[in-house]
Length: 454
Ligand SMILES: Nc1ncnc2c1ncn2[C@@H]1O[C@H](COP(=O)(O)OP(=O)(O)OP(=O)(O)O)[C@@H](O)[C@H]1O
Ligand SMILES: [Zn+2]
Image 1 (tube, protein in one colour):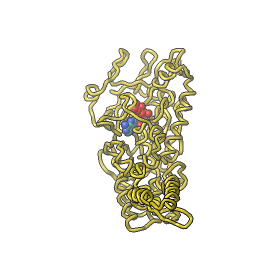
Image 2 (cartoon, rainbow, N blue to C red):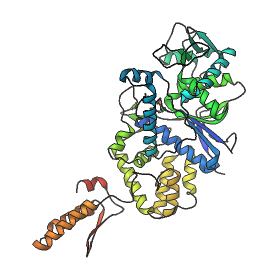
Image 3 (cartoon, rainbow, N blue to C red):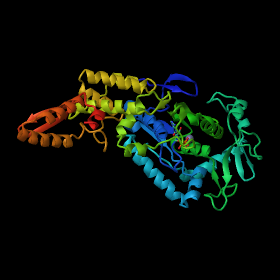
Image 4 (tube, helix red, strand yellow):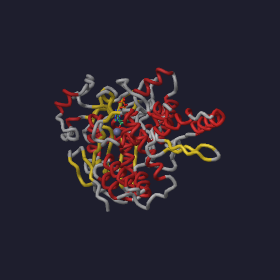
């Protein structure tokens, strides 16, 4: 069996991955808060952990991996959006979830096994909060229920900070009813104009952190293998999830391995909705950047390193994919992906290493091996609609060439034909004259940017 190593944020070490139950490997990834289109930064964890999902399915079997990624469909950002637009909350969340599916499908991400909506899990959240109150880890104050961080001595271990450091470093809301500034909300009261559910503490709604704890517990159990998300969630979100789940189930250990992807940056800063420095996945797709290219660009950087989106990377990705498509067109994939590619992925998801190994396969002319390996990474998939085809559409250029040739035959001046031929071949397009007309073919040096200027 392939040995997988992963960098566990909890231990700060690269460790051999050993599932609790190799017949059911379980992973949870924090999903989006659904009030707006996903930006390119939001797509990074989706693509990165899709690779992990695919690798686990490859190693343990397609039916032996359970992947849960939630939708946070109750949140004050959603309430604000509803108030601003006058639209019903459910219309906003349904529409955003449909967009999310469209956009992430376009990136070739497999749908997780379960995609729970937080609002379908209010009862388990209330049950967990009651448990925390009963065990002395939470208290009721002014219609709120708060988690008492001082009741959990291990609080801060995931991010490796003391409570004092965290107070100093975080902009915590110091509500008068909190015993400690780090205490966080499990439940809060809802006025008549806000979504709310009946609870032992009156009509209200859950805090964000308890949502993930309750959904993970319900769908994966109290101890499971992997919990993942963006690095921006490590503190406080994941720290709080651990505190809630470990206190509610003291004999279980919640997630064994914690994985965090680094951020997608724009000029050195995290791409984020709040900073306003974002563009959406849909913006790129609508501009004609294929989802496969976006996916490839994400995979060019290791998930634990920050990355930028650049046009140069997109061009490099597109050129490589075209080359590989041409090489593998009509070729059946090998039975197994190349061991070098699998080994790179198994080494803490070294996707850049996997790409390098695929370049080696391409150079060696192993088209079947390349195709099987690329498909393990969700690339060169025959099914993907709107993805890069085997070659560019050159029909307009062929027409232009045929028209010029017809003119030239009459005028006996072939200079315009020759000039076009030269520009096409400079863009990597082979020009073949046949008795029935001209045939154009993108060669291995095909360059889309140059073709645009022909
Ligand atoms: N710039 C980024 N790079 C990588 N991952 C990101 C980035 N921004 C958000 N994420 C991740 O996207 C996922 C969805 O998170 P969420 O819907 O809460 O986004 P968000 O935090 O609201 O976005 P923003 O920070 O822009 O408001 C999380 O796993 C989060 O870590
Ligand atoms: Zn979460």
